[in-house]
Structures are given as C-alpha cells and as structure tokens.
Image (cartoon, rainbow over all chains, first blue to last red; front, side, top):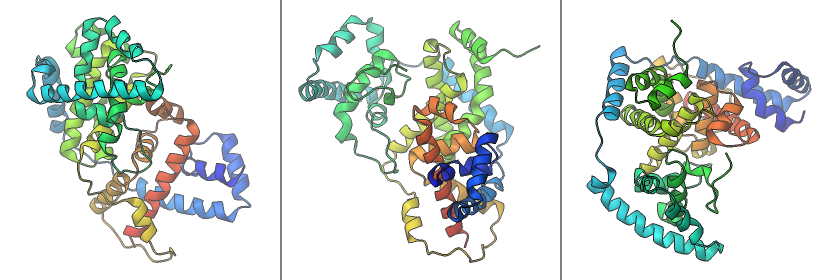
Length: 190
Length: 183
C-alpha cells in the first residue's frame, strides 16, 4: 500500500473498523514508514480525546416536548403556502427569477426551453404546485454546490441555476436534494 | 409482540396513520437531533431544524419507494436541512479551522493542560462546527453515527474515495484544533 492509501484508512484503523485484510496491509506498511507512524500517533491522540467526551444528555421531557411539537405541526392543518405573506412575496421573486433563469439557461446551454416548460405543462397541476413547497431561501441555497470550505457563496451567483434546477426538483420530488440534479437540468438516474 | 419494521410503519403512515409516524419520530428523533446539533452547534436551531426534518419526512413519505433504508433517507434530509440552516446564517462567527491550523506553532511536545468534561465538550463541538460542511457531514455520520461509507454514499451521493478523504481530513483538523486549544 502507498502512504496516501494508508493515511486515509488511519481513522478507521484506530477505531478498529477495517477489514482484517486491510488491517494487515496497513500494519505491514506501518512497520516500515515513519511518516505514516507520525500520522497514526496524531490520529490516536485526536480519537482518544474524542472518545473521552461523554455524550450529551437531555432530560426525557426534552424529547417528549420535541415529539409533541413535531406531531402537532404534522397533524394541525397547515395553511396553503401561497396564503403565507412571506411566501407569496418569495414566490413572486422565484417566478420572476425562474423566467430569467429559463431564458438564460436556454440561451447558454442551447437546450430548448420547451424541454422544461413542456414537462411542467404535461404534469398534473398538483405536481407543478409542488414548486410552492420550496421557499426561496431553500431553493437558492440548496442548489449551490457544496464547497470544501464553510464560506457561504452569494445566492445571486447561482440563482439562475437554482431556479432552473428547482423546477426539476419540484416536479420530481420536492424532498430530494437539489444535488440530485445535474447542471444541465436532467434528473440523475439515482 | 414484535415491533413493526420501518417499512411497515411507512405503509401505515401512507394509509394516514399518525400514530405510526409518531413511532418513527420516537425511533429517530434523538439521532436526527444529534446529527443536526453537531452540524449546527446550537440547541435552539437544532430543535427547530429537527422538527423541520420530520415535517419534510412526513411530506415526502408518500413518495418513499423503499429502495433505500429509511434511516439513510432520514440522515439525508437531516444533513440537507442542516446545510440549509447554515446557509441562512448571514454572519458566521465560527473560527475557520484552516486559519487556526495555519497560525499554529510547530512542535507538539508541550504538555497539554487539563480540561474538564464541560470544556472538552465545548471544544469538540467547536472543532466539529468549524469543519468545512462536507467534512463535517462525513465526520458526524461516520464517527458518531457509525454509518459505513456505502451508507454515507447513499446519504451524500459521493464516491467512497472522496468520503474517506473527507473523513481523514476532518479527523486531522479536529486533532490539530484540539492540540492547539489544549496546550
């Protein structure tokens, strides 16, 4: 095994979560590699500390209250999203941005706009209404690609793409992550 | 009497049985809460986000086909809701781990100071919260939830190699953070 392969498996090795064959290979490599042994020592130290942290405990009442709140929100009829003022405003922005998004998308990619709009038109009305289940923040932020850093990209940069993708998300399954959709607006196979 | 499987409960929920959904909440609320809490590092936000996870789950169960495990499906919603919350935060007060690490002095022979359990919990929470989002997701699902890489791949739709790399880098950064903070 090469060092790169070994180090990636060190957390699992320290926690004894590797297959026996892999474990033997790692140990064989560690027998002759001082750099990986240094990584191993650092990893053991970190994991020892993490393992020493007791799990946070919350009183039974906390869980009970949380459960009751969830069930209340589920069983009590919720107003239609378009009757919520904040949503209505958001929907207007979303629809406006959607129009721009479809135009830009079509212009830049060469894909016919009709491939999106005709799909929407061919679906039952209630599925198209699913678009309203996604509020503007969710749509625009969730569609941003995840970065390796915590820095938040500006929503505007990706709004066009987000809006286009949101349409596909809404017609397919509003609960799915928008990362399920590739950048050409096609629904991925999984 | 044997308790119903997740799939049986889902079937009952689809038939309009709220009690079955309550059973699902009972089974998963702690897992969801702790995943969200570790992602957000904020009690109040985590309680709200946990509720949102289950509402999204309830709304989407009618479309759940059962070709994935319910728990990976729930983890997926939980991590997505968490990311959505993170991105709604206008200002991040979290210290970037990369900055901390780059400012660290070299050499690790200084004795570690003693920290009590409360302080240690806070330190670890800060270390986890300061990880880049994807590394944080992988770390929480692998280290705390003990999901296999295959299961995490179902949750995050990433390759196993990428997940292993995320996990290793997360662990390494946490170790460096703790070492720096505890000296």
